[in-house]
Length: 497
Image 1: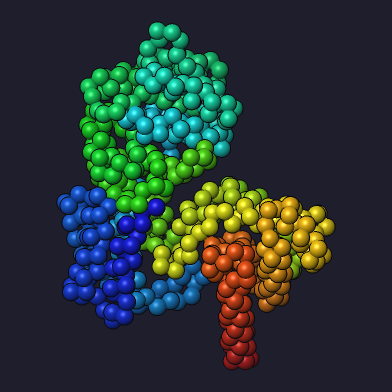
Image 2 (image 1 turned 30 degrees about the vertical axis):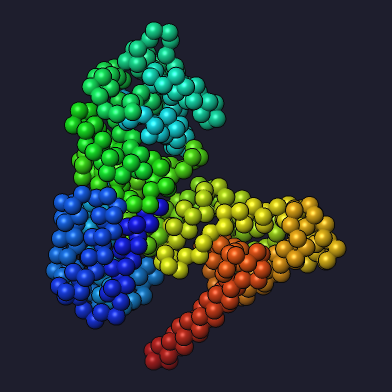
């Protein structure tokens, strides 16, 4: 997602590596990389020029701090390159607009009219929003006001059954505005506190569509009108958004198919073209693949710095906090089992595609290993082929048991023994981290040995990987830091004494 933009900003940062101070010449050189990326991402030239001018003014005009305090309170050096990236981040956030605007309610009902061209994903987005509103404690009603596409109402009803959400569809000869007015009355009579209107689209903008949407908006009187745009349309999506905004009063935007957009120009230009904020991002086919828009998170991902806040929120949705704390405690005692690993693998799979998950980690693009989407499934198949005793005590797995597990999972005996060996090393290292006072939690550390998830060469199937060496280095570094802190504390105590 947004690889074109990310490559451009990473190239700019590399241009400033080793620079002792920012000046007009090296900032211009770095911005040339950014300019190329923005133009390749389908942004208009005036918008690109304005953005670059603001970054340049900020980078050269602001006094650069040589040291800042990080989240732990420690002072860190700030390089000129880091100052430049921080300026880019602030200007990207300003360009993307305000974050996480809540949907407005009127008379206790949150009503949302979804408009847009045909094929941009309005019907699926309506169901995703229904699911999101359910998580917010709302009782939504879906209204199938798209009477142009024959299968639209049937699709919405199928999605409604999946969510256990009622869908109201039109009667014979009923017009979309009449259906929307009937939905408002039904919501009042049956205590629905959320209404989602799925309107019709067209293959192209025309006056008939606009007149129908104006009539629907008058009848529905929604508290929110969201324009749904397909990010894959690039600059065309921006032009369409501007045309809709000129005719229909909008409260916000929803971008769909952002996971397939390598350029990212639509995401950056939408707010400028319409004057309204992006409110939701749809990043996959699953009904849970919807997130409220956070400009800070998207800006951070564009700059190749991940989105840790977004990742934590994703984990909170699929992981029971108390259970996770107990699991972390067991891991640090070296007592976690294959059953624990299986549970975390399944939680990881609920987070969506691994590419999206790793994109939210602060790993530079050049260092991010290719992801094998099938690896989790292969590990899960082997664990499921084990007996309960073998899952709880993997050391029981001898060559003959490994042969049986391999046959049951469709893998080789070497694969099973490799998984057992890696698991044993991981458990030993986690126990060592716990003994050194290392903190747990923080994102499934035992997965570091799985290929494609930080475990070295993903092309080596289930072999011993380099992720374990990395954990050992981190453990030793943590122990050295703790020893230094103890010596400092002792010296302070002696001086006070």
